[in-house]
Amino acid sequence: MRESNWRFHKCLSVLIVVLFALSFIATVHVGPASAKAEYQWKFAQPWSRPLSDMSYRLFCDLVKKYSNGRMEIKLYPDGLLGTHDESFHAVQDGSVEIGVFSPYVTLVPGGMLNWMPWTISNWEEARIAYGAPDGILYKVMQKAWNQVGTQMLFVSAQGAYGIGNSVRPIRKPEDFKNLKMRVSSSLGFVRALENMGKGSGMTLETIPWADLYNALSRGVVDGCWDMWASLVDERHAEVMKYYTDLDFSWDCNNVVVNKAKWDALPQDLKNAIYKASREAEAHMYKVQQSSEKSYKDKLKKMPNFQIVTLTPQEREVFRKKANMPAVWNELCKPWLDKQYPGQNMTQKIQAELEKIHKQVMAKK
Image 1 (tube, rainbow, N blue to C red):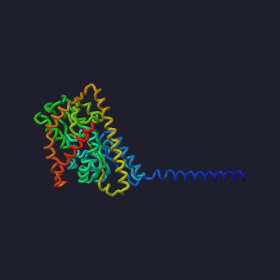
Image 2 (cartoon, rainbow, N blue to C red):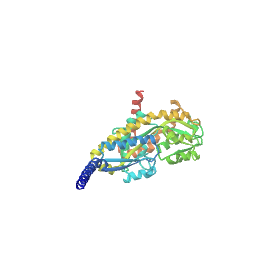
Image 3 (cartoon, one colour):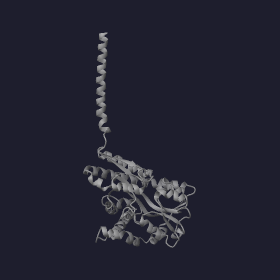
């Protein structure tokens, strides 16, 4: 009996030692992996854009990788942190660290320079003009974002804008006759559209992008400027009948970070974010550009939707009527003269964009 008890206690002691050892090993193994990151940031994405979200998630993953786990950024897509303007103000006040936004002049006074119509016309021009750190539009937009307490990281582009509507095909400016067109706070777009439709009886209605599908479906507006991606992903083609490939402006939203939070980061983490930004931006360009053909193919198969393809000569008529020199002088020159006194930046930027255009066209 005593030998049996002795054996029992011996086995129990061995079991306790084994369990303790396993517990110690598990603690050593799990501990570091479950430790919280030193920096835990939020990324606000106010729209439903699944293709773009792929690149934003890649950015978050790369930041964690390049920071060796010291920083984790969580993406909140589909407006989970609020509307566009609500999310912008959250980043501006620091309650959210990062977000992707359209630099409307109501929020960013210099924001019109991000996407002045009839400047950038293709993917390669965009890569050069918006490329960090030396792209002309990257540099000027960095100053614009700094002015409102934020720092620009990288751009998010979906391609060129055309014109969609539910009334008639648009092949010439006169086809804007009596159309009710949706516009936003992108004043460069607004002025260009006003000029292109001048004398046609066209009217403009300011409607948030998030409300656009419902506004089109209910007939509040007849049409809007739009992109191939949004026609499919945001289902705008369901509530419009025609889309003209005007390619009159370039979609380019900006991923920005609260500047105070950015300035407070150690340099190695800034480097990690910067590296992740460049790779995510390159991924964004590749994904969006390669998807453009599939978007067009899907739209061509829709029975009640027509793509109107313009000739270069037809497009040039709209370009001239847009009267962009006057729009630059009205919208851009006052801000640029104040931010770059005595540097004649309006002409310098336009000259640099024209140089990029010629450089790209020479390769084709």
